[in-house]
Length: 556
Image 1 (cartoon, rainbow, N blue to C red):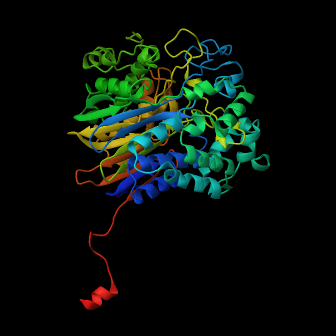
Image 2: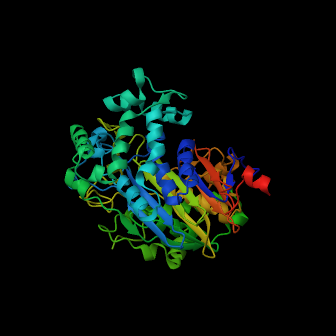
């Protein structure tokens, strides 16, 4: 594997705690809290708030996401803070653009992607405050302090950040709030420019004082948010915000190559379909076939196509659609689906019936007491709905794009329905002890990317850094995307098998992970696809009763 590709980054190690995020300043915010005695939940929430400032194109308190916790007592819980469709939403609220293929979601005027009608009811702030209040050990003002400092004092844009601004510049220019912030003088900010966000700092100070009630209860911030969204075409009301609820869910559990794999349940597709695909692939000797070989890539591609066929038919908000979790994750069903795989590229239909934008962020955090957090959060598209909320420094999500704009389907819009997601905050255990935790951004490509990292670790025996940086493939049934690191001979052989291969810059986003050794040492790793940075905490406090005093030393 090392001959196939060379890692661009290096891991970090430490026994006192680890924070891995997709921005160095967010990782530093989390470690600041760990160093002050906070636990993994405290640090993760601090890192997420910091990301709303240094990675605002990806995440914000106006978004949603999933937080997968492993508590020191070994309990796992997934906090569902996904956004929901407003009460006024309807299955036919969008019109499909002429000529749009059945598997795509392009609507007239891009109404489900840009502008007020694309905004779903946010829930991220509720989930972060819930996590901190129930499982954290530090007060909200302390956890928010690093983010507020970054907003008030500013930070320097990385090349990655500046390129994201440039990519979205035409839409940002149409919105006065976003243009003023990210296009000063009418041109995109440059790498190295300092970005100061006083309105965002003021908003976070309101949150520090009032918690989630600042947005979901009565008050000035909620009024500004609702008025600002309404002026830009949103149908979200005060009642929608008051109805936001965080749900604690049990994870999906499966096994692969002797490890137990735990992931989020529906409405996330990751836990179910990673289990499904790993069950299918466990019937093949991927290690013997070799990493990056056409045979291995072919089998992964076929498993992905099978999972996406079933996902489209039967995975959605379980309060609206009966999801056949037991069948999808069963060994018997995997054997049935595996039997349809040949050495040629296949086409698959769903074999079950019911009974996303790619700009996201992920944090992986662990503390010295056994707490682990894997959290994936988003405003969905790059800069969300590409509208700012006046007077708040906030960017609205475009989570409505995750719904199927055609009525009558499992993923169709319905009032109060939770958005469907591919988020995959995963934790793996060996003999009941943590082995690794990981996740990444990337929309539809998330769970396939995370699954391939799991395969790299468990089948190909890669170390953590190689596993997160390894070249990926992806398909949902049409083109088979290959990253640059996949060899040319593999590409040719896949084409000969009937795959419509397509080279892409990246599949999914910046994966980050933590691996756990039996002696308590942790290794953190992040990949080249984002500004991912692991920061480890080592050392610790003085031995009890030990101190240095010149007077005592002289007396001795």
